[in-house]
View 1 (cartoon, rainbow, N blue to C red):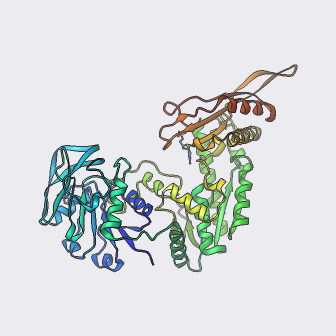
View 2: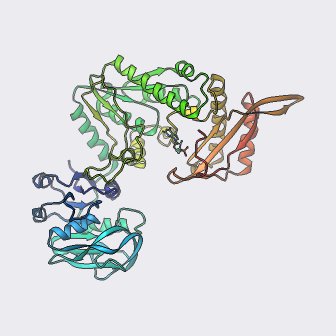
View 3: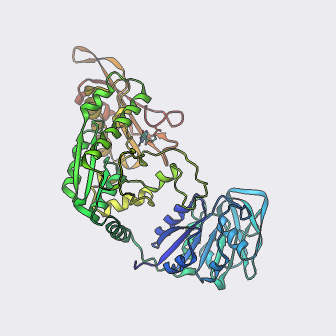
Length: 517
Ligand code: XMP
């Protein structure tokens, strides 16, 4: 490891990975370690700086995570954030109390003293606070450098020992100068040089994967989505043909997508690639089924039946790899290295797959587990994955199954694939693509009367959907220019057999969802 190292010491806060990501954004290599990592181990890692994360506890709770006082004799520059700030004060002899009034949300702070931490930060600025305890008395040798209306020690420090503490969260974007404050700590206090780039992540991960995998085999379920594709490319770089990717093609992908995935991974990357073509099997299972939840269940269950069946055939004599990324772990409640239980289970994510009991791998490998989506994309681009795949929109696991309302038939899949391809083509040509987070066609179970030439038609309606959103929790329908919509409508009715009407979905989320089923 040639890079300087920053350790994020995890006390159970929900933003631990966000801190790590901000540090990486500053070009500093960063590792998250549990709060109870032995001091000898920390010393041996020789970090240039350490950041204590926040956490859900009070320093006075018997179960709260603590750190030995001896830590502060190691001479490592340290920044305590929120709980980490209170812990630093408490451990060094200060006093922590419950606030009369909790501070939550955007709060203005005022600097009272010059501080390296506030270099290029205005004397008054807005930060994000979320705390019910506060530091009421500083340890000896410390001084306050900023306060808010309700928090007398919003920032304090002992610059002689390079100990800094902030009650607020500089890592979240609501703290307007938060990134500058982190930069100041890293570069001005610790003396990091910013010697880490994404290439280093790739090199380090490849080296670690080679060491972990040795001569064993690795199996990865490849969906053609961004995460599993990047994991596949990384593993391919690490172990080449020891990697087998299993791609289950359920026939509910977009037009030509299955072929594109196969071509990409067989031509550009060194690996064993297995495509399981089971379109007919899925159609049989879905025959006559119209209930959306039942369709989802069937597609999900059959997908894994096919996948595990293939694994049994191939043999599970090695490692099982998954394209889990950090947000998947938060959603599954596993994002908390300190195990303090603050990150509650929100939903079990499709990337965190439960293994059948009869399948025994030597271990699981998740090379992207600490990265955020945009970091995963950056790695993917560096590894040479085509832009089309790296910048792919989200695509639901059940695929076109949730965009064909009513029974799914071969003909409906064909109509929807054609229609979707035309819509995407027009959006791409119009230049509107970059403003849209997701756009696709839907085939409602509706036929309407139309006229073509001198003939009456009674054919399918296509709905088109395009949304703008930051996080998919809420979304707005996109204001696509009328002339683009006109071209789309024209082409859909002329080029896609059995389509005679087009509607544009102008529902936001809520009350609608992005998908129709
Ligand atoms: P909704 O329809 O819930 O969609 O507003 C929000 C986002 O999630 C995607 N989505 C899914 N992704 N499996 C997935 O991997 C699913 O079952 C699924 N359902 C919806 C949807 O495409 C949108 O981006």
